[in-house]
Length: 277
Image (cartoon, one colour):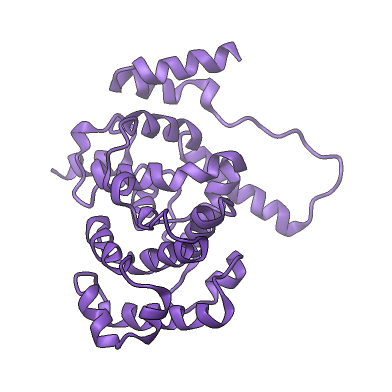
């Protein structure tokens, strides 16, 4: 416990160069798991070998995450203030709240949080029945700023009609079957609407960050999710999406603000960028 406290204190007080030294120190290297007496299957051996290679290359995932958390202490990124999972009316009945949460999340793909929030808040004035019976062209007008507004209007109307007959989905499996809902949206919906964390939702910001540093070089959201879930305890999963998304919105942008980042001395993207310059 004392060693852990010293490490956390080092994170909060260290300069960039000191952080680089901390990250490369031997006590951050992955511990070797004790060998099992039982024989592993070939597939398990291959999986273990692959994961071991990944871990050797990522400088310590949890330690990098702790530094990102230090850079996110103020929690003032768009996702913190107007994230789609926050756009619902707490004074409404629980079924309406869940509908508003899911519709807001369905509006969010390929759209900035500020725009999603603006459109989602317009829909708060309408009941589920209103939206189910609304002409799609009218619904498009209410959400016109979001990308793919015609398709999203169609999917939201279909959701409203489904909810009238079946009610809101209550599980991840039910939610992901809805048109316009992918893995990320389904996981966020279950987390916000039911306070159940069933996985780590993966956002494009997270993929960019994890490939740049690198934490894990993989474009597949599902593979990245499984990797992060293997690196962190379940009790930590709930905060990872918002922490990394906010970091991607403020510092590790498509055009990153590398000079503000405490990870730049170990970041592969930063090194390559400065070498090419």
